Image: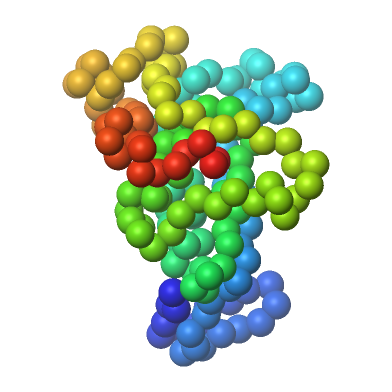
Length: 169
């Protein structure tokens, strides 16, 4: 997919003007809650709560969406976080797969990266609020939290999940 820029776009290396820009490979390492680094970052324990992902998920989606828009046909994008929270991982990937339906897919690259340790992505998860409340669907969310906890943070319906191949995640 080629994106046409009408304004000057600055990068660290050069200036592009009125060119089609696309990349064969994109590393999309998004800002995250960092809960995957709790064991090596003890300061995080004092500040962390499960709700940190709520504000980050929309930023992660926007960055990953932009990455896909800049991806050349046949290119590969890696989506990366240092989080274990499915709101920052599986829900973002599920939303991208639904938004770009048929244009992108998850690819198993284990044969290209021998020794890479992976686990299948989740097909089911719940959303845990800032005070450890557990929600299994958007309908469970109190109206006061519905602007913070959004429907796309929950797993898609079972029939949609089957088409997404999140196990490749």
